[in-house]
Image 1 (cartoon, helix red, strand yellow):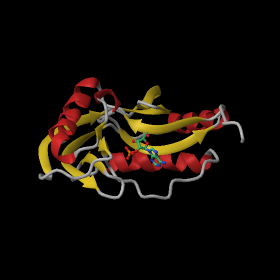
Image 2 (cartoon, helix red, strand yellow; image 1 turned 135 degrees about the vertical axis):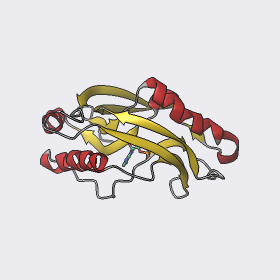
Image 3 (spheres, rainbow, N blue to C red; image 1 turned 90 degrees about the horizontal axis):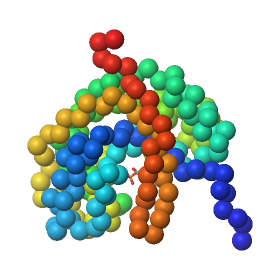
Image 4 (cartoon, rainbow, N blue to C red; image 1 turned 120 degrees about the vertical axis):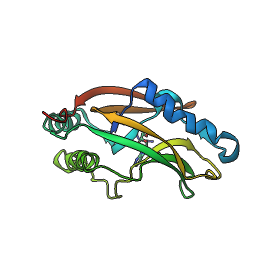
Amino acid sequence: MSEPDTTRQRLFFALWPEAAVQQRIAYWAEQCAKSCGGKRVPDENMHLTLVFLGGVTPEQRGCLEAVADEVTVTSFDLTLDRIGYWSRSRTLWLSTSNTSPELLELAMALRAAMSLCGLKVEERPFRTHLTLRRRAHRGPRFREINPIVWHATDFALVASETHPEGARYQVLRRWRLVASGE
Ligand code: 2AM
């Protein structure tokens, strides 16, 4: 059996909200607890993945951070106003009916970093979502929620470790977005 590659970290770029916003998001994970089933994402893990990077070597991480240093996207408001369910992945999620150009620009810039840094590029299209519950068996009966307006002022590089009790995430570094009006 081959040894696990301990030099690689499982990383992703994400929008990582402050605790107060995480709690407002988590409210919706709880609202659908009985009817949707599955396992809720803990409050402190609530995030929006910009791009999943997979196993990354220290050299590749240095390269990814250098690309992130050059990102000049403006801060933006993200209005979470939709709740939904993907039956294939059995995921319950929150999303927005209006993905802002800044969010797309940010996700695309970080996705481009993958090929620049020698990683296999993510081919699936970017779909704005925050996972609320995994292995859910049904979606909610409603589609719209009282909007949560989240002012995104930075993005983060996050490490993911898989443990028997679930994923454990560690924010490694944050980059500020350019303040609007600067
Ligand atoms: P998900 O919430 O839609 O499952 C950390 O695991 C984050 O990266 C999660 O938000 C997860 O998205 C995403 N992720 C995990 N594994 C992935 C994979 N193999 N491909 C793409 N995204 C992945």
